[in-house]
Length: 183
Image (cartoon, rainbow, N blue to C red; front, top):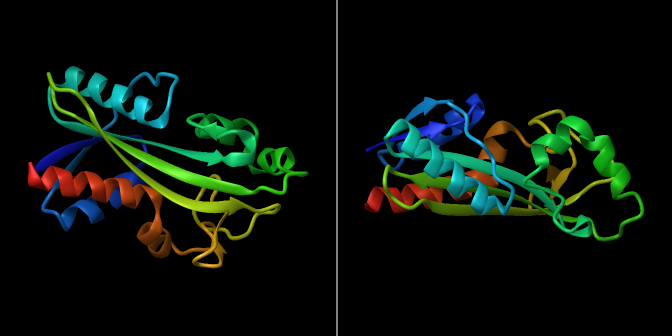
């Protein structure tokens, strides 16, 4: 079995290959880009998958990932990458300065589509909370702020292997891989 992963992130490709290998799925990688519509994480992944599957005329997957903070009504959500580039972690800390509710979720949605088919989506989530200061030098983006109670660490304090074992992306990719291997 073969699927093409559409992403500009090499770490995501490595993670996908590691996960999919257990299911007998080979991963090719391309990055033709695609427009991101405004909407839910599932809508963004479904649209991107359908767009690229039709463009390349082959089965593909895309990953849309976001940080959803309850006290900020789900912000930054699907705008996480843009917010990380503009506000950075310092801006998120500032936005939450007086908030007691620090609950947040990382969500990853794998969108799959084959040409002339409707897309399918697979959602993975990890619950945590946003700290008032960064901890750890591992990972990237929001990882040093995102505290996972079960590990008593932030994603930024976890090793790559530890994070990959519990990540939202692992959960969404495993859901997809189980479904895909049964097709």
